[in-house]
Image 1 (cartoon, one colour):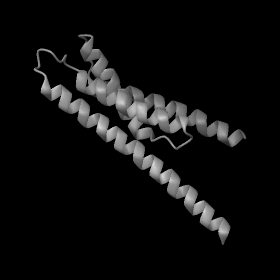
Image 2 (cartoon, helix red, strand yellow; image 1 turned 90 degrees about the vertical axis):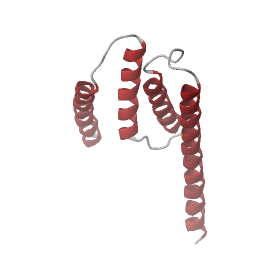
Image 3 (spheres, one colour; image 1 turned 180 degrees about the horizontal axis):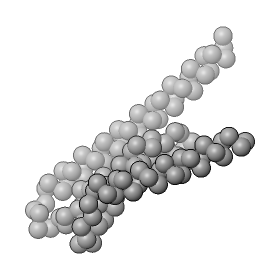
Image 4 (spheres, one colour; image 1 turned 120 degrees about the horizontal axis):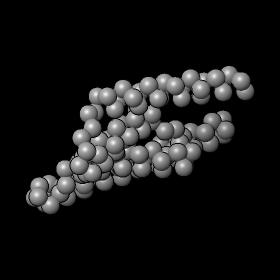
Length: 122
């Protein structure tokens, strides 16, 4: 019975830490959004929002990974798309989002097959 209590406490601690990371992410997002809206369009380069969203999503997933928590593949995918779209816009290059999504989706399928194969070999 004591063992179950310890497992429950560990899960609660993990859940609290993940909720804290999620709150930090939302806080960063709101600060970024407010800062972008605060300044005139002439000061904030086009693509800043998408770039910021990509950095926040990838940063949160990196912190989760570094702490040993499960990474959300969907938010990593969205973070990469947002980062590339924002960076290309900041650099004055136009990148269509749909072809980029198709490319990243295809790459994730290819790497997903390799990951499943390695698990099978072990």
